Image: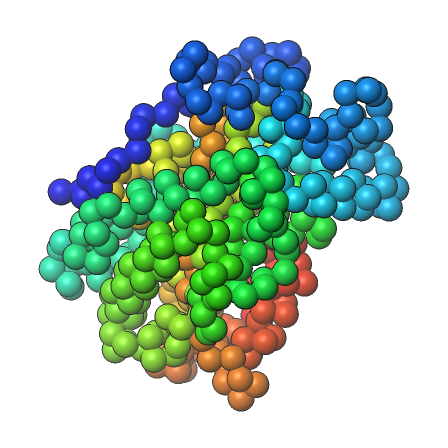
Amino acid sequence: MVLLSSPPAPVTCRHLTVSEHRRPTSTSAIRRGFYRLQWGKDNKSSQLHTTHKRPSRLHPLYSPKSTGARNPTTMASAAAAAPDSGRAALLKAFDESRTGVRGLVESGVSTVPDLFVHPDPYASVPLAPPGVSIPVVDLSLPAPAAAAAAAAAARDWGFFYLVNHESLVPADYPAKVLTAVRAFHELPAPERATHYGRAMGGGVSYASNVDLFRSPAASWRDTIQLGFGPARPDTERIPPVCRSEILEWEAHTTAVARALMALLCEGLGLREAALEEASCLEGKVMVCHYYPVCPEPDRTMGLVPHTDPGVLTVLAQDGVGGLQVKHTNEDGESYWVDAKPVPGALVINVGDLLQIMSNDKYKSVEHRVVMNSCEEARVSVAVFFNPGKRGDSVFYGPLPELVFSENPPKYKSFTMSEFLGAFFKRDLASKALIEHFKL
């Protein structure tokens, strides 16, 4: 039975259909069909989320005196045609507002500024046929059966739901951490702004778009990022409203990752502790994403298609939805599969490093977050597990036990410094990371 740990309240929303993804749509049609807010009179969040009201405070890119360069939408709409210096100035102004995408929504924008527009973001790969879903791994199964299920999911999909993990995760989690993260992102703008900054001072940062100044288009999300390993963060730098929940969730996800790494090692015919002995539990980064309500959901993205660079990712998501996984079936057909929220389930995915260490036995696949017509912001918390040993004499590559004459190494060995250097030189959507290390 799937653990039902305080499931999120039902959310009224829908994703765009295949035909809606592909057809040209006017702004007025978008507003009529894709974005209908239905706030009740007693809804305390309505003043923050509804975009047609006059803002209670002005965003630095917004000016009521002009419909020209100081309005964030008009100003940003000129960005595509402006020289790079003009776009850079707009990005700088947005970042220096210190309130992220949530601040844009609070300021009253009713269209998506062009800084955030992704040209035809949903047209390249179709959506999956009805009934297709990522696989499920049940931790209540006997260990050999659970290991076989985890290995098959990691090999064929790179993603799976993890259910019946109550021996590792208390009943009030992950709902408790998701609620706390939402509470931070929905603090008044001046309170959030005191935490804003791109530098990981004390191992903690709060900002919008980690690749804001490198990507061709910004995405519709804000993020708290925390480094939990190899060095621990300065806990006083974690916002008080979500501090205890974040610290507790890090401990719970570590227990989950330890159990999963043992199962995945067994699926490769390795000792259960092989990945843990390679320090793969010691490097940890947590990202607490907030995807605000969007006035034009088909013009932007919450998270562009990408693969995760690490070994393993443990994701908790609320009931809003939007995560999609790219799957290629046995006939070579690719499509996007909705990883819909399942009460009590965590979402697990293989990262680039595990694909490399498994010598392509497990695969790291693209995934994305699409915007939708929800009247509620989406919240998710992901923990990325990576090797913690970072010395120049410590090399990573295919595990030696998996390399032999019939299965030669497919990747060269590298240090974590080399790997992270390659990661940070590209924008999030780049697919060049694994290719960079292929033999």
